Image (cartoon, rainbow, N blue to C red; front, side, top):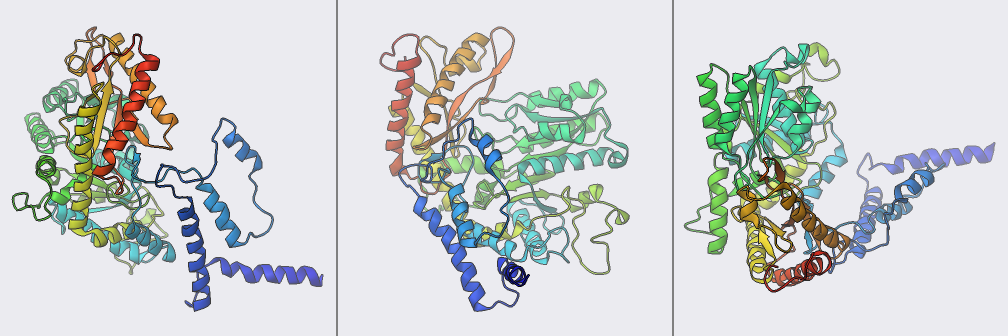
Length: 563
């Protein structure tokens, strides 16, 4: 009995050691910092600047996750934290890491200020739902809402918002507000079945999922044709708005994509706002809620006030030209009723740090809960900030990470980083045109940080023929399969250089009356370590693999030039 009691006492006394100290004493702080240092050292030892993945063997075969299910158990007694750290570092073996060869999709590196902000939030672990529970997060949230409102041209005394779960959360929040604007009783009685929403064919699938989640149903999502630069065809939007109204439907929500994930296409928010207002007035309807899905591209609003004539940061002329082209479109974000910034994208903060902004904070009342529905928090004689209008109840204080990054980078820091991405992307395009005659850049009108290219099998039509409807569905599917083989070849070696790809660049008409999407390989400049000097080596590697696809998969041998 005495021995069992001693073991129990040791266990009880060790439990507080799992937590940061109550009084800030030095020995506990030193131990805590050493544990964090062990993790950082462990990651540093795994880094490999000549590849993409961290070191370590981890074969994710078909049986990998099945084996995990069978072998994973909660230990019967406590594990020393040093050993826990070792197991945590093992999780990172063979994990993708943001070296100069990381060129896939929109998966950026978490910056030190972003990580420090998240650590600050973790140390107090406040619930951002209410400032009584999470005053630090509430303060940071109000600050970043004001900062980003001023950046895009909202009136900060009038605007509002909150952090949410990615661009998906922002699109969903905008849809909730749109429904409530057109049917105030919808939260209680359900969503009317004659409501319709609109987005372009190049839009992210977030709205598709949101339509399912709200009960509207994806069949009431109208896809608007895209232009060659991946922007929404506003005249097609006009036509489809009229068609929906003529058939008894009510347009309530339009998502304008201001920076598509695949091609960096930017919808014309000004024209979309004008056309939707014009049609609504014509039919005596309320204008649809306009949401700018600026999760990716919105960060180029950091150039809205940049003086390109004086060019104080001395960007190259071609970089200025590209940035100016983006700036002209981003200047109209202020016309959107709501928008978002995924800071875990170009804001360089950890997952998940997204900010939903709304032009008129009063709209939040449309989806807020009544006092009797929130008996646990808010609506007291104390506390000034209660976010009952969010879909989440418990809310992470990710606003602190956003605040930290904004302070650290500042306007100039973000401008320099984004300009570097654009400059490197321009260098990739020039090298591809010079070194890869087999490839055709299929988003040439989209300045930014993404280059999409497509290769064509022997005798195939080219990109211009595809866009103009001169190809049959079979023609395009054949070329798509050819490009998919390049995806596979590059994917098998993604630990060396990690490229992206897409199976939905543009939706194009076919000669036989149908339509289909084009496949393309993606170079996404997202690592701060990718510089112009690395471009020749990366393109040489790309050329070797493209030629391999021609040699292995072409129906006839490749000759000089493209085919």
